Every structure is written in C-alpha cells, then in structure tokens.
Image (cartoon, rainbow over all chains, first blue to last red; front, side, top):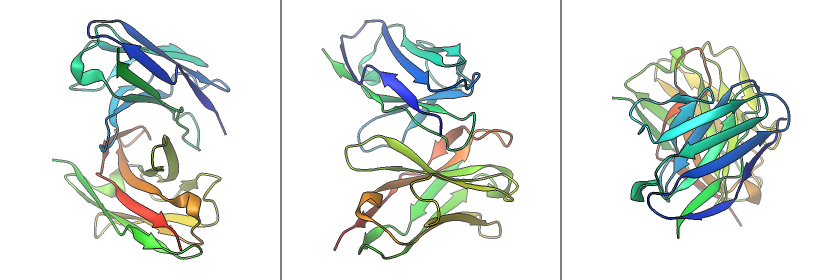
Length: 107
Length: 120
C-alpha cells in the first residue's frame, strides 16, 4: 500500500497567516491527491482534488500544488473558520490511504 | 440535495457481527463509486472499503480483508458494510461517502457517521 506522510502534525498560527501543509507519498501517485478539512464531530469536507483543483464552494484562499510524491496545501490568509484538522488522501490505487492529519490551532 | 444516512452502529462483543447501512438520496448509488471510511476515537481517517460504480469490483483495506464486505442494493439505493469477526480495534465512527463524479473515487459527500463500539 502507498503510505502518506503529512507534516507538521500540529501547526499553531494566527488569523491572517499564510499556512502550508505538506504531504508526501511513498511512491508516485501522479496528481491523484485530495485534501479534506475536518472539524470536531463533523464529517470531512473535500477542499481540493486532483492535487490542485478547487472543489466548488471552497474559498479561493485554499490552494493545492504538487505531483508525483510531494504535495502542499496552502491557506493564503488564515480565517477563524479554518481552524480544523486537514488530511491528504491518495486515490491513485487501492487502498485509498490518508495522511495522519495536520491540526491547525490558534496561536 | 445529496444526502447519505448511515445506520446500524452500536455496541457489539468481540467476535460479533454488525451490518451498517448507508441510505442515499439525491443521486443513484449505481452510478457512483462508494466508500466506507472510519475514524477511531481521537484518531485520523482510515479508508475501509470501496465499491465501483458498476458494482462489479470491491476493495478492502488489509486491516479488514476477509472480515468486512461491501455491497449495495440498487433498488433501495443503499450501500452496506457487513462486518464480521469484530475486534476492539474496529471501534470507530464509520462514514459512507460517494465519489465526486462517476469516473473517479475521490469522495465529495459524506454521511454523518455511525458509531461502532466493540467491547465485552
């Protein structure tokens, strides 16, 4: 199975900060990568698919980049609603594996 | 409006069985790939099982292979997860999710989840 490694596991930031989360795949997954946001007690929400495509309705301050084995999720200006846990997921091949998650906390 | 409603969770003893259901509305499950994803208390997301849009192919994580089975009933627009030989480590909230478009497996809509607790 393809292993997905996210970093950092926790991130402390302030409103207005630019935030970057990294996800690495154990082998090439082309651009078959998604990013999800999850808030406590809620189901995950799709933000980005195919590494850099913004899901409909998602604010443009979210962006994704990368291909092969290295990917990033960037929030250009952190908003109060963005404090949550973020997960990457590869869908290049089954099993569809998730990264361990990055919790974005208020600094 | 797309909705997914999971049910069937609860408390079960180790070695027992449960069948989770995911009733869909607003779309046809026979046209989309569907997945089950779980989240143990305080832990991250773990993909568990998937079924192709055609229904001809099913996939399972190594951690549940041989114990769990995914299926669907097109007439009821419902997806199921049959879970046998349950272990304590299967304790989690189980979510079902639909693929964003028929030709992919990335998921866009998720249900609210159903809690499975495996304990004696």
